Length: 584
Ligand SMILES: Cc1cc2nc3c(=O)[nH]c(=O)nc-3n(C[C@H](O)[C@H](O)[C@H](O)COP(=O)(O)OP(=O)(O)OC[C@H]3O[C@@H](n4cnc5c(N)ncnc54)[C@H](O)[C@@H]3O)c2cc1C
Ligand SMILES: *[C@@H]1O[C@H](CO)[C@@H](O)[C@H](O)[C@H]1NC(C)=O
Ligand SMILES: *[C@@H]1O[C@H](CO)[C@@H](O)[C@H](O)[C@H]1NC(C)=O
Ligand SMILES: *[C@@H]1O[C@H](CO)[C@@H](O)[C@H](O)[C@H]1NC(C)=O
Ligand SMILES: *[C@@H]1O[C@H](CO)[C@@H](O)[C@H](O)[C@H]1NC(C)=O
Ligand SMILES: *[C@@H]1O[C@H](CO)[C@@H](O)[C@H](O)[C@H]1NC(C)=O
Image 1 (cartoon, rainbow, N blue to C red):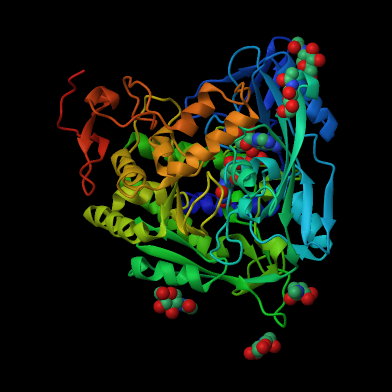
Image 2 (cartoon, helix red, strand yellow):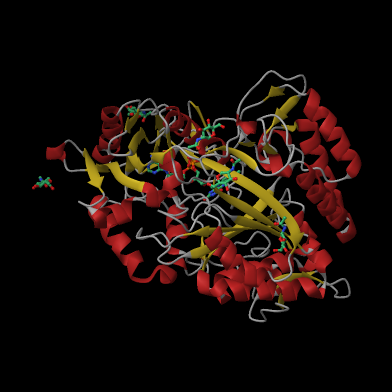
């Protein structure tokens, strides 16, 4: 793929893509030496940019080894966190407390996938990757109804943060709502051997299941996940690149009409891309593949070039440069159908029809192949490629229309200022169904994702960061959107406990019962779960670690001051003002 930011780059990119043939898979997230281990996420940087340390790591391969690992931690009163082969969660949820903490990795706990055709279920070890799971299920003639769009995740890790695709139909777009059973390893007392496996089944232990389905890893280690499956089916996708006029009136119908529909909104380009995506009739067939362009292998030279270009546009405060980039990127997506491939090789036109397993998720940059030029995922931290924030807000359906209208107002004041998000993926709009999971959504909801530039250091402000901050605060405060647990900057989590109301307390009750010694808690996961705003410091608003209330929380020396929002006037954002002299 190419996040091609100029025409010449995208031509180069296309050429290189045709010739390339060696891909570098992501690096493992945990590294250990004699002094201990460090855990990072796939982006190589936690929101606080600090490293995460632990004393020791263990790699169980069976449920009994997993139980023993938890037993060891329990017997010696160690703090513990589960880590995966992928570590694709942005917040520091997987980081344990204290220097003697222990990590339990599921990266080698991935051998068992059992399909029960009569019961229409599949049960997998929690370390199994989403791709392996899907392929096994499809090979047996079944499909899994939903999944995140990115396949570089483990089944245990993805349900733990509430990961989702897009659907208001059937069990809905959240994977945890397809979960019908979970085995969980929890601490126990000495007479029980310090740890035990509890088996939670839908229909029998529903209250417990509501807590365990989305647990942020703080209840224990998920050992096995049982999902409901259905007979294999095909999907048909057409992208309609069109105007964003009346988006606020169309989105709901769109979500209802198309089983897997979504919308990508490029506000600065006044463009909406409607994804008409549904179960195809039995007489329509095809071998189409969804190889989403953002998740394809990217020549390392290109990722570096794109990052260098973005940095220079930031440094020169070039809105027009960003907008040109947004134009080229969007044009490239249009001609390539966003990475859809009719025959599995190239995009030749709509609709693209293919089996659920090939359409629901992608991530071809994850796999090595033999190539002439080195390629990797575009954000691979080893190569100074893309580096960005990701805001993901989940709206109650009834509030979303007004959010669109507000963003349009903000956009209409000066569309160029939103180009910085449109060079990534605009605003991705997806649909998820109400859930009984305590840390899920109680009602049918709309999820938005947007990405934007993150600087190499914590104290460098971004071009038009006030606009992104205003949208972020609008979403989370004005419209009371909930944060996706696996994404977001710290500000997204402020007040999250109150948003979950009584369900939050039900979750905590289960937590206190299953993990009374709080072995699976840490200051970082507490920060996310309880959403308390910590103390403010100079520059804290730049990275979304606080909402500014004084200029020093922004960057007065660089001309960024704490100001009110333009549309949502209660917002407090860091805005650039060239006329203002630094007070610092
Ligand atoms: C490029 C990209 C695209 C993405 N696209 C989507 C998307 O379309 N939709 C979406 O919803 N999300 C998406 N995500 C987010 C992603 O799905 C979640 O962050 C997911 O939780 C990551 O899974 P993981 O296996 O890497 O888990 P990790 O990030 O390693 O772990 C997540 C949390 O779960 C805990 N955990 C992991 N395994 C277990 C276990 N076995 N038992 C108990 N706790 C456990 C960890 O301690 C940690 O707290 C995307 C992320 C990236 C990087
Ligand atoms: C690491 O954990 C294992 C248990 O999995 C234990 O046997 C070993 O002694 C620990 N090592 C250290 C240095 O703590
Ligand atoms: C251990 O736990 C079991 C089950 O919860 C309980 O019945 C037993 O009394 C406990 N034993 C001790 C020593 O706490
Ligand atoms: C694309 O969407 C627009 C706006 O909803 C609609 O008017 C148009 O008919 C659609 N085009 C196709 C090919 O479906
Ligand atoms: C598939 O069947 C539907 C009705 O069931 C029909 O309208 C359509 O033309 C058929 N398509 C093909 C390609 O045969
Ligand atoms: C899906 O498409 C494939 C390939 O064209 C075809 O063989 C298969 O019968 C289709 N399956 C269903 C359930 O429509």
